[in-house]
Length: 341
Image (tube, rainbow, N blue to C red):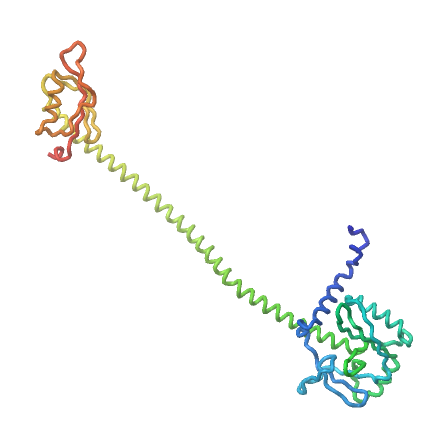
């Protein structure tokens, strides 16, 4: 069922009463034994019909500690001026229960509605609630107040019926006591809320500190990466420079050895041999050319007294076309020791 304009009702519930229902629910909850301690009871000075008095703890027959000062005053009406009645009702909310009790009061009261003073006390009984009603006339209340005028000393008291199981009659001094009780309860709840917030802060603070340390470590790591990046770049540039220097040095050394190598090869080549190509890669040398006896040339280059090692022909020796010479491709290695010599 959707809400209609101008009709604040949803599924038969008047949404304008949601605040009142919320408050009534909490008021009932605070009456449970497990939560009743959140509403501290005041000491009440009770004036009894026989002229005696008692110090009670809240609206009950329980005596208050003798060293506690009374915060309010209550007058108990004589039993013969009060009409008592007991009814059983289903468990209802605060407003619904009050309306049901009002209907019962109007039905059973022997006094005119404007003269009727009433109160009730609710006790759960199984799936129902037992309501103890107390009714009287305002004239009886005025008579009781006039009788106790000397002991009242100008204080507006509460009006009770039945001293042993008190029922508070509505419309007199009970409102001030209820306000003080609610204020005391709110202070207790506020103290608990403050303690909860404090404990939550104590529990969360280490987590927040650890989180901040993690973020700080991340920031420091990022800053370190930025600093190290330039150092790594310089190191890489230095490594590249060193590699280029080594390559240049090797190239220069190779160029310095090339004349000596050519001189050695020239000394070992017979007069009938010539070179058409010379390749030098580090210590590896390849010569390509023609000779009258290429096999003999290989023997000369690989002889024990030769400065060359691992002399070999990577391809077969062949006869040159139209000539009495042989084509050869010979590879050998120039040892470092020999180079030094």
